[in-house]
Image (cartoon, rainbow, N blue to C red):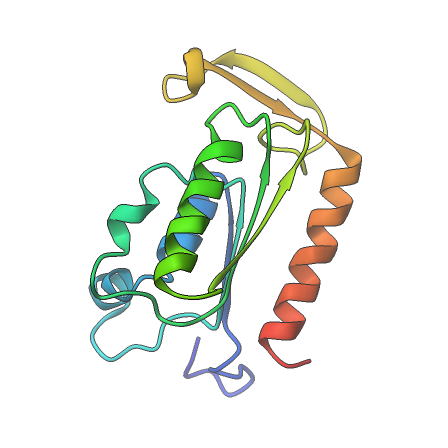
Length: 158
């Protein structure tokens, strides 16, 4: 993408949802950039993770640190995968090591998949109590989209 003449190579962000959110946040680690994008690659200009399964994200961020690109995490308090708890812990830990690199919004009384219409509940082996709940929340869906757009505009100085 960086080589395409119509794309500004300094304005490439990554956004993901659930496991994709986990990947988009982990891509802010220098280790991940070196390993997956290649030596000398700058990484992404910004990272947005919607309900990103924050559990175990710390393992990507060791002494090599972060790329310095800003990170936004949006999660539900009642997330079946624990994001309401684990994301706050992860953000606190990472911001302590790298002042203010991550912004976090936790939506009260909101489940995983809050931006997808409909709902689902069923067996999910990695969820708390092995029961996964995905549930639409119009307020969180609207607010999270607005926050993501505002975040990216700020990251790109637009």
